[in-house]
Amino acid sequence: MAPQPWDDNGCNKGTQGGSYLLEKCLGNKAPAVLQKHWSTFITENDFAEMSKHGVNVVRIPIGWWQIYDPQGGASKAKLNYHIAPTDYHVGGLAYIDKAFEWGQKYGIGILLGMHAAPGSQNGNDHSSPAEHPGQALFGFCLLNEPAHIDIGKLQDYYKRAYAAVRKHSADSHIVLNPLITPFESGTESHWTGFMNPGQGFTKVAMDLHYYSCFGGGADQTNPD
Image (cartoon, rainbow, N blue to C red; front, side, top):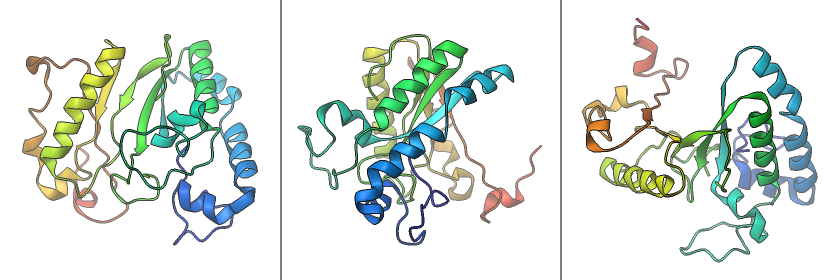
């Protein structure tokens, strides 16, 4: 649901990363290309196979614009704040709905991950939810791999987003990403006591992404 460089469809990976630029590169072919990808990349058979092997939760990366599909897309929605661009192609939400149906059928929880927030939370190509009642909803990852953001503002967002989720879902899991690679930036102390159960927060988990292939602190980290 949030394209990465390997999913380039012949476009220049260096200049056409991310959903919006990919769509602009594809032009009139974009709707057909996206529909083919959404309908074939992950199918019900994959959920059946995952269930057979004991997988109980899947994480689905989503873009902020996909929640506006019922209104004809973000460009036609009445947004309460200024965002540009908004002219993404519609249709992705229907496949997110399918994932919830398959998840409920095969006993697999769905973790929705906000990979593309308005304006992009990290500047990467993969960065840029509707109501889903039922047993398939596992939780929400509030923001994937934020970077170059003031920690205070990020933590304030997490608290406000937590409150917004809890208005509609009292028992879903809430997953937080600290600043990406906190072990390199020395921000661990800001997160170890953040949003703990003793402060009234429930079912909150911290998700750390330790990449060992891009250099930096993770390459020297002892896995033990």
